[in-house]
Length: 293
Image (cartoon, rainbow, N blue to C red):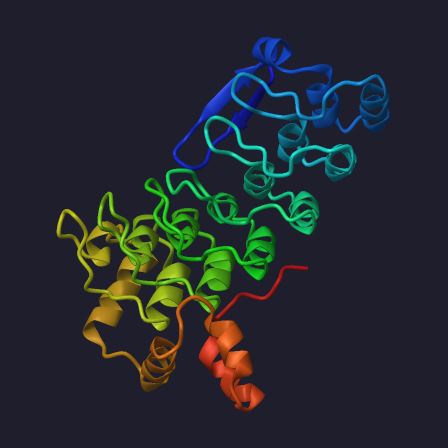
């Protein structure tokens, strides 16, 4: 039996075929399957493009969830509500972001979908993209004003979420756009560096420390990041090296300059400064990996 699954923001929901059939209208099914002609016919027959399931999911949710941008576009042109929210706080943009549907994300943003959520208990689209490790969606959302330091009770900040999934690409985008590398997650008092240590990702450990992460920060259990990494891992070895060696002058200078800027958007602020391109690149450097071919 096929299953539809959403798993982000601390939720893990599954709907069986039988439940799907009971819950969703013909428009929902057509949208989720990319059946443009069926959608067109249903609209002509008067079927609602905003029909909701008991959980508040609309056909637009389904089109975005299943990565069908043409279906989504058709629905939006017919009056689909771009920011329709399900009862568990998910918008079409959040779902598109969670599955890495770059085309749907672009479309929704062009239609002025809200990038940030008003209810902090719900994961934002940026959290959803970070959890999935979808750095292209992360970049799109940041460019449209996504709050890189927005807090979700379960994940913490988007940077926490990216570190939890070992996504260096997402973490690089977030840091270069002003994410706080020392943000503390309320439920366990962990920083992104704690999370990177837990998943034993030495690349993330290096990225965070080089951008000012506190290697001595303690969580709710009074543990430092090094205490959470496996002792035989590269992450543990790297943290041990950082703890026994002083920070290099290059990192000290870069982080001192950044600390004097508005954390919300250092990259944009640096562009406005009357500085040579080489210095701008120095300030915003995050050791971002080259895109794979």
